[in-house]
Length: 137
Ligand code: NI
Figure 1 (cartoon, rainbow, N blue to C red):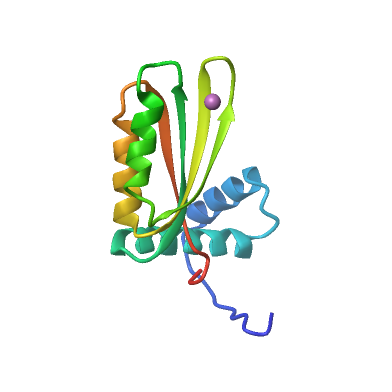
Figure 2: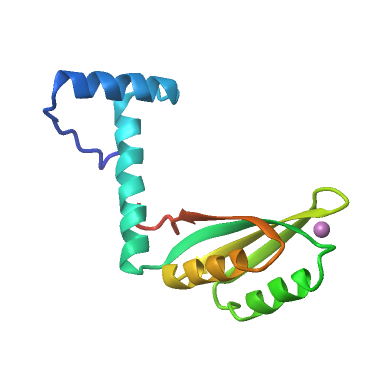
């Protein structure tokens, strides 16, 4: 890459040792890549905090046999059509479904959708994966 910039960092020896052992656990081959990821992580967090356009995914587990749960989840999702790119539904076993809702749009809407889905009775687990459109990182 032609636009690579090198810079020096001063920090305490113990802090660097801790960092090196941590990135070794995570299988990084060098500090630069680990630092790049930390910076990206921070920029993604900032984008979510500042309401910039983000991408992400909601993963949820629920029992589709329970009364009205499927209809409720569908109704809620129809209210957020603007940020939902796609959904995948996987029948995990006789009772349990896993659904992944892929999102692109405003962080506040993604959080609101996640909260509403989580609040539905018989939904067992919901995670919101906060990621990025990839453009500014
Ligand atoms: Ni299912």
